[in-house]
Image (tube, rainbow, N blue to C red; front, side):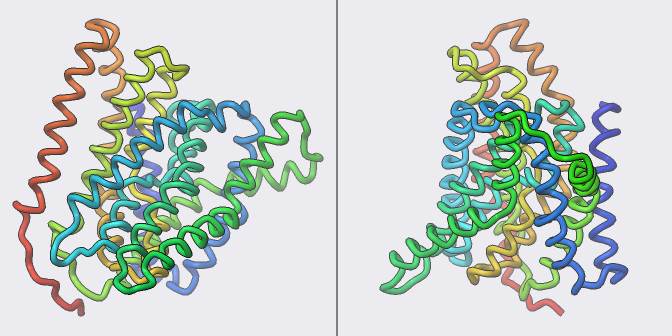
Length: 365
């Protein structure tokens, strides 16, 4: 556990530093978009390019990894929508909440954190999951959100939203940097010395700056909320992200492995930990762009980020114990334990909206 905390504490501490810097106005709010742009267009693409160039192409686009991850993403999306819908949360807000519950922060946090924990081989499965979320999960949730907007043009709006989301994914520099790295991996090309040094310098800056930016973006999102969101409208989605999502990933991936699918124990571990990451912070920007309740989305992201420090660390420490149970008593015992855990977790999450207070939103000061 100490070895895991020695990795996770610095990562989450940098997120806290970014939050406090923005809150205390050491980092002006007007500077946050520039910081975000530096990470998105310069440092993170260079880091992903390096991982893409050092990872076999099949590991970057493993069809089994993609299939397992996408099946669970669909389950999480529709389960979260079913849990979230109520008199205050309509389809549009529920769909963006589902995106937050199904889209871990693999780009800004996941790749560097899991590589630090598990080694460079972890980059392949994490990048697989990130590509699935960028192109499929995001497009689906945005389409569902637009379909939930009342009016005769709802279906046309949903189709336009899908096209817009796909264009946004294609315009995103992260998939292109991964693709360029894959080309270098397949062809054996290498960057010239000075250019390689520039890429290395920018790539090395990605982890601290990205984590700092997450904290600053979280603060900024919370400031743009126009009302207080009842706990019952956002906490269940955060718990789905941190508990249901990784549990379903582990159950399906472990089942696929036991049935003989070409999925290693290491890949199962990486996918499970990737799913246990907090929600992607950029979803709040999408919610704001499409007119959803950005305050609710910001609170889901904030809750998942705060709670993930404990839940992610505990899960990372527990995975070796789970492997021991599998080795000692076999897959049948492990499957029954997972089934009971999944049923209990889902039951708790479904009961939360009924148990938590449903105070009316109060205008923020």
